[in-house]
Length: 168
Image 1 (cartoon, rainbow, N blue to C red):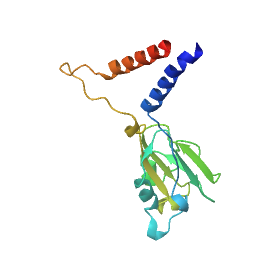
Image 2 (cartoon, rainbow, N blue to C red):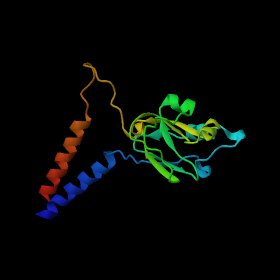
Image 3 (cartoon, rainbow, N blue to C red):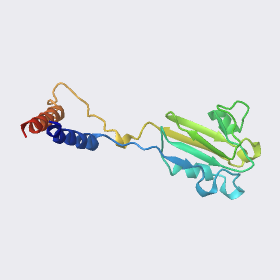
């Protein structure tokens, strides 16, 4: 009796595997191999350039690696003025700080050292909602649109597979 259900369960498993989108979170090391450090005078835009070459999504994380420095998450105004007097989260100084990007929108980080921040050690990044390419958007529906066939085809296939399992 149990072997009669095997084709049904296998078909259902394959169908779910094919139709379920996969979303994988990524971890980014801020600054790449350079890490989180005070930029020299010729590279003050290093973190802006680094962020502009990446696309961040909710669920991703960023990791700051540094020595003798700090990372402070701040509001937009504080980012532009290197003001760390009202941080959004606790000041991190352990040399290896990971921040989970848990919501869509702008994130701002600066060095806790005012001079480092003024020299360009600050990061602004935009976080997008979950990977949009993995979640298909339904087309707009109007009253004149034909009835969608996917549910009908899906349940017909499911019924045929279920019947085939019992008829063997």
